Length: 287
Image 1 (tube, one colour):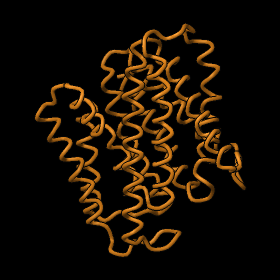
Image 2 (cartoon, rainbow, N blue to C red):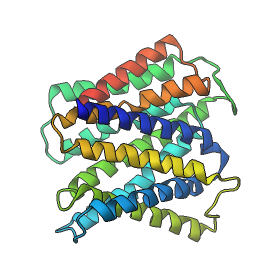
Image 3 (cartoon, helix red, strand yellow):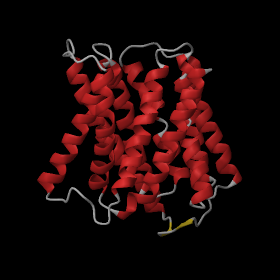
Protein backbone atom coordinates (compact mmCIF):
# COMPACT_ATOMS: atom_id res chain seq x y z
CA UNK A 1 0.00 0.00 0.00
CA UNK A 2 2.89 2.34 0.81
CA UNK A 3 4.37 1.68 -2.64
CA UNK A 4 1.07 2.70 -4.24
CA UNK A 5 1.00 5.89 -2.14
CA UNK A 6 4.52 6.79 -3.27
CA UNK A 7 3.50 6.19 -6.88
CA UNK A 8 0.51 8.48 -6.51
CA UNK A 9 2.76 11.13 -4.92
CA UNK A 10 5.12 10.87 -7.89
CA UNK A 11 2.22 11.21 -10.36
CA UNK A 12 0.95 14.33 -8.58
CA UNK A 13 4.42 15.88 -8.45
CA UNK A 14 5.17 15.23 -12.13
CA UNK A 15 1.66 16.38 -13.07
CA UNK A 16 2.22 19.73 -11.33
CA UNK A 17 5.68 19.95 -12.89
CA UNK A 18 4.29 19.48 -16.41
CA UNK A 19 1.42 21.91 -15.81
CA UNK A 20 4.01 24.55 -14.88
CA UNK A 21 6.06 23.59 -17.92
CA UNK A 22 3.01 24.15 -20.11
CA UNK A 23 2.52 27.61 -18.60
CA UNK A 24 6.11 28.88 -18.96
CA UNK A 25 7.27 26.95 -22.05
CA UNK A 26 6.35 29.65 -24.57
CA UNK A 27 7.56 32.58 -22.45
CA UNK A 28 11.35 32.12 -22.73
CA UNK A 29 14.02 30.21 -24.71
CA UNK A 30 13.72 26.49 -24.09
CA UNK A 31 17.30 25.78 -23.04
CA UNK A 32 17.33 28.73 -20.63
CA UNK A 33 14.21 27.37 -18.92
CA UNK A 34 15.74 23.89 -18.82
CA UNK A 35 18.93 25.24 -17.24
CA UNK A 36 16.87 26.87 -14.50
CA UNK A 37 14.59 23.92 -13.76
CA UNK A 38 17.10 21.06 -14.09
CA UNK A 39 19.78 23.10 -12.34
CA UNK A 40 17.42 23.78 -9.44
CA UNK A 41 16.57 20.09 -9.20
CA UNK A 42 20.27 19.23 -9.22
CA UNK A 43 20.93 21.64 -6.32
CA UNK A 44 18.03 20.20 -4.34
CA UNK A 45 19.17 16.62 -5.00
CA UNK A 46 22.82 17.18 -4.02
CA UNK A 47 22.42 17.34 -0.19
CA UNK A 48 20.45 14.08 -0.20
CA UNK A 49 23.15 12.39 -2.27
CA UNK A 50 25.88 13.63 0.09
CA UNK A 51 24.00 12.30 3.11
CA UNK A 52 22.49 9.05 1.88
CA UNK A 53 24.57 7.88 -1.11
CA UNK A 54 27.60 5.59 -0.95
CA UNK A 55 30.30 7.57 -2.73
CA UNK A 56 32.42 5.05 -4.59
CA UNK A 57 33.31 4.93 -8.27
CA UNK A 58 30.82 2.84 -10.27
CA UNK A 59 32.18 -0.41 -11.62
CA UNK A 60 32.35 -1.37 -15.27
CA UNK A 61 30.40 0.86 -17.64
CA UNK A 62 28.13 2.31 -14.94
CA UNK A 63 29.56 5.81 -15.21
CA UNK A 64 28.97 5.84 -18.97
CA UNK A 65 25.39 4.64 -18.56
CA UNK A 66 24.80 7.42 -16.00
CA UNK A 67 26.25 10.05 -18.33
CA UNK A 68 24.14 8.66 -21.16
CA UNK A 69 21.01 8.99 -19.03
CA UNK A 70 21.88 12.64 -18.40
CA UNK A 71 22.29 13.39 -22.10
CA UNK A 72 19.05 11.56 -22.88
CA UNK A 73 17.25 13.56 -20.18
CA UNK A 74 18.22 16.78 -21.94
CA UNK A 75 16.69 15.41 -25.14
CA UNK A 76 13.51 14.37 -23.31
CA UNK A 77 13.06 17.70 -21.55
CA UNK A 78 13.75 19.67 -24.73
CA UNK A 79 11.06 17.74 -26.58
CA UNK A 80 8.66 18.20 -23.66
CA UNK A 81 9.11 21.97 -23.40
CA UNK A 82 9.03 22.53 -27.16
CA UNK A 83 5.82 20.52 -27.48
CA UNK A 84 4.18 22.36 -24.57
CA UNK A 85 5.11 25.69 -26.17
CA UNK A 86 3.03 24.73 -29.22
CA UNK A 87 0.05 22.65 -28.11
CA UNK A 88 -2.24 21.88 -25.16
CA UNK A 89 -1.65 19.12 -22.62
CA UNK A 90 -4.27 16.77 -24.07
CA UNK A 91 -2.14 16.39 -27.19
CA UNK A 92 1.35 16.47 -25.66
CA UNK A 93 1.01 14.51 -22.41
CA UNK A 94 -0.30 11.18 -23.82
CA UNK A 95 2.53 11.09 -26.36
CA UNK A 96 5.27 12.04 -23.89
CA UNK A 97 3.92 9.57 -21.33
CA UNK A 98 4.06 6.75 -23.87
CA UNK A 99 7.78 6.26 -23.19
CA UNK A 100 7.07 2.73 -21.79
CA UNK A 101 6.12 1.85 -25.39
CA UNK A 102 9.55 3.05 -26.58
CA UNK A 103 11.17 1.15 -23.71
CA UNK A 104 9.34 -1.98 -24.88
CA UNK A 105 10.86 -1.57 -28.33
CA UNK A 106 14.33 -1.15 -26.77
CA UNK A 107 13.83 -4.35 -24.79
CA UNK A 108 12.65 -6.24 -27.87
CA UNK A 109 15.71 -5.10 -29.83
CA UNK A 110 17.91 -6.19 -26.91
CA UNK A 111 16.49 -9.70 -27.17
CA UNK A 112 13.97 -9.74 -24.33
CA UNK A 113 10.81 -11.75 -25.13
CA UNK A 114 7.74 -9.53 -25.44
CA UNK A 115 4.37 -11.02 -24.57
CA UNK A 116 1.24 -10.75 -26.68
CA UNK A 117 -0.39 -8.65 -23.95
CA UNK A 118 2.48 -6.16 -24.10
CA UNK A 119 2.14 -5.83 -27.88
CA UNK A 120 -1.63 -5.35 -27.54
CA UNK A 121 -1.02 -2.67 -24.90
CA UNK A 122 1.43 -0.94 -27.23
CA UNK A 123 -1.19 -0.95 -30.00
CA UNK A 124 -3.73 0.48 -27.54
CA UNK A 125 -1.40 3.40 -26.80
CA UNK A 126 -1.05 4.19 -30.50
CA UNK A 127 -4.80 3.88 -31.15
CA UNK A 128 -5.60 6.08 -28.15
CA UNK A 129 -3.26 8.83 -29.35
CA UNK A 130 -4.90 8.73 -32.79
CA UNK A 131 -8.36 8.97 -31.19
CA UNK A 132 -7.30 12.02 -29.15
CA UNK A 133 -6.12 13.81 -32.30
CA UNK A 134 -9.04 12.84 -34.52
CA UNK A 135 -11.77 13.58 -31.96
CA UNK A 136 -10.59 17.13 -31.25
CA UNK A 137 -12.53 20.24 -32.17
CA UNK A 138 -11.84 21.18 -35.77
CA UNK A 139 -10.85 24.67 -34.66
CA UNK A 140 -9.30 24.39 -31.21
CA UNK A 141 -8.23 27.75 -29.80
CA UNK A 142 -5.55 28.36 -27.18
CA UNK A 143 -4.19 31.59 -25.73
CA UNK A 144 -1.80 31.75 -28.69
CA UNK A 145 -4.59 31.33 -31.24
CA UNK A 146 -6.06 28.46 -33.23
CA UNK A 147 -4.04 25.25 -33.54
CA UNK A 148 -3.22 24.67 -37.20
CA UNK A 149 -2.39 21.38 -38.89
CA UNK A 150 1.26 22.47 -39.06
CA UNK A 151 1.30 23.16 -35.31
CA UNK A 152 -0.25 19.76 -34.63
CA UNK A 153 2.49 18.04 -36.65
CA UNK A 154 5.29 20.03 -34.98
CA UNK A 155 3.99 19.49 -31.45
CA UNK A 156 3.44 15.77 -32.11
CA UNK A 157 7.01 15.48 -33.39
CA UNK A 158 8.52 17.21 -30.37
CA UNK A 159 6.34 15.23 -27.97
CA UNK A 160 7.61 12.04 -29.62
CA UNK A 161 11.19 13.30 -29.25
CA UNK A 162 10.47 13.86 -25.56
CA UNK A 163 9.08 10.33 -25.22
CA UNK A 164 12.17 8.81 -26.87
CA UNK A 165 14.43 10.93 -24.67
CA UNK A 166 12.73 9.81 -21.46
CA UNK A 167 12.72 6.16 -22.57
CA UNK A 168 16.47 6.40 -23.19
CA UNK A 169 16.88 8.12 -19.81
CA UNK A 170 15.26 5.23 -17.97
CA UNK A 171 16.99 2.60 -20.11
CA UNK A 172 20.44 4.05 -19.43
CA UNK A 173 19.57 4.77 -15.81
CA UNK A 174 18.46 1.19 -15.15
CA UNK A 175 21.73 -0.12 -16.56
CA UNK A 176 23.68 2.39 -14.46
CA UNK A 177 21.99 1.39 -11.20
CA UNK A 178 23.24 -2.18 -11.65
CA UNK A 179 26.74 -0.93 -10.80
CA UNK A 180 26.09 1.56 -7.98
CA UNK A 181 23.31 3.14 -5.87
CA UNK A 182 20.36 4.61 -7.74
CA UNK A 183 20.72 7.98 -6.00
CA UNK A 184 24.40 8.19 -6.90
CA UNK A 185 23.71 7.38 -10.56
CA UNK A 186 20.81 9.85 -10.66
CA UNK A 187 23.08 12.62 -9.37
CA UNK A 188 25.72 11.90 -12.03
CA UNK A 189 23.01 11.94 -14.68
CA UNK A 190 21.61 15.27 -13.51
CA UNK A 191 25.10 16.78 -13.29
CA UNK A 192 25.66 15.70 -16.89
CA UNK A 193 22.36 17.30 -17.94
CA UNK A 194 23.26 20.63 -16.33
CA UNK A 195 26.72 20.59 -17.94
CA UNK A 196 25.33 19.77 -21.40
CA UNK A 197 22.75 22.57 -21.22
CA UNK A 198 25.36 25.03 -19.92
CA UNK A 199 27.65 24.21 -22.86
CA UNK A 200 24.79 24.63 -25.35
CA UNK A 201 23.87 28.03 -23.89
CA UNK A 202 27.51 29.16 -23.69
CA UNK A 203 28.48 28.05 -27.21
CA UNK A 204 25.30 29.53 -28.74
CA UNK A 205 25.74 32.84 -26.92
CA UNK A 206 22.39 32.62 -25.10
CA UNK A 207 21.78 34.03 -21.65
CA UNK A 208 21.74 31.58 -18.75
CA UNK A 209 18.85 33.43 -17.15
CA UNK A 210 15.82 33.98 -19.40
CA UNK A 211 14.28 37.44 -19.35
CA UNK A 212 11.60 37.77 -16.73
CA UNK A 213 12.63 34.45 -15.18
CA UNK A 214 11.21 33.72 -11.76
CA UNK A 215 13.69 31.52 -9.88
CA UNK A 216 11.11 30.43 -7.27
CA UNK A 217 9.22 28.74 -10.13
CA UNK A 218 12.37 26.94 -11.25
CA UNK A 219 13.08 25.85 -7.67
CA UNK A 220 9.52 24.58 -7.31
CA UNK A 221 9.76 22.59 -10.55
CA UNK A 222 13.11 21.19 -9.49
CA UNK A 223 11.68 20.19 -6.12
CA UNK A 224 8.67 18.50 -7.75
CA UNK A 225 10.89 16.52 -10.12
CA UNK A 226 13.23 15.50 -7.29
CA UNK A 227 10.26 14.48 -5.10
CA UNK A 228 8.76 12.35 -7.87
CA UNK A 229 12.03 10.60 -8.69
CA UNK A 230 12.81 10.02 -5.00
CA UNK A 231 9.36 8.51 -4.45
CA UNK A 232 9.86 6.02 -7.29
CA UNK A 233 13.39 5.15 -6.11
CA UNK A 234 12.26 4.58 -2.51
CA UNK A 235 9.34 2.44 -3.69
CA UNK A 236 11.76 0.31 -5.69
CA UNK A 237 13.04 -1.39 -2.52
CA UNK A 238 9.57 -1.94 -1.00
CA UNK A 239 7.10 -4.76 -1.37
CA UNK A 240 4.90 -4.52 -4.50
CA UNK A 241 7.17 -1.89 -6.04
CA UNK A 242 5.35 -2.33 -9.37
CA UNK A 243 2.36 -0.48 -7.90
CA UNK A 244 4.46 2.67 -7.65
CA UNK A 245 5.62 2.30 -11.24
CA UNK A 246 2.07 1.92 -12.53
CA UNK A 247 0.67 4.80 -10.44
CA UNK A 248 3.53 7.17 -11.33
CA UNK A 249 3.03 6.50 -15.05
CA UNK A 250 -0.39 8.15 -14.74
CA UNK A 251 1.13 11.63 -14.28
CA UNK A 252 -0.07 12.61 -17.76
CA UNK A 253 -3.69 12.21 -16.63
CA UNK A 254 -2.95 14.49 -13.67
CA UNK A 255 -1.49 17.09 -16.03
CA UNK A 256 -4.52 16.97 -18.33
CA UNK A 257 -6.97 17.29 -15.42
CA UNK A 258 -5.03 20.19 -13.90
CA UNK A 259 -4.84 21.95 -17.28
CA UNK A 260 -8.57 21.45 -17.76
CA UNK A 261 -9.26 23.20 -14.46
CA UNK A 262 -6.62 25.95 -14.43
CA UNK A 263 -5.98 26.57 -18.15
CA UNK A 264 -9.45 25.69 -19.47
CA UNK A 265 -8.01 23.20 -21.95
CA UNK A 266 -11.22 21.29 -22.52
CA UNK A 267 -11.56 17.89 -24.18
CA UNK A 268 -14.31 16.43 -26.32
CA UNK A 269 -16.02 13.20 -25.10
CA UNK A 270 -14.20 11.20 -27.77
CA UNK A 271 -10.87 12.57 -26.59
CA UNK A 272 -11.53 11.37 -23.05
CA UNK A 273 -12.00 7.89 -24.52
CA UNK A 274 -8.63 8.23 -26.24
CA UNK A 275 -6.98 9.36 -22.99
CA UNK A 276 -8.44 6.34 -21.19
CA UNK A 277 -7.18 3.95 -23.89
CA UNK A 278 -3.68 5.47 -23.85
CA UNK A 279 -3.19 5.32 -20.11
CA UNK A 280 -4.81 1.89 -19.80
CA UNK A 281 -2.16 0.66 -22.22
CA UNK A 282 0.60 2.53 -20.38
CA UNK A 283 -0.45 1.09 -17.02
CA UNK A 284 -0.10 -2.45 -18.40
CA UNK A 285 3.27 -1.70 -20.01
CA UNK A 286 4.53 -0.15 -16.76
CA UNK A 287 3.47 -3.15 -14.64
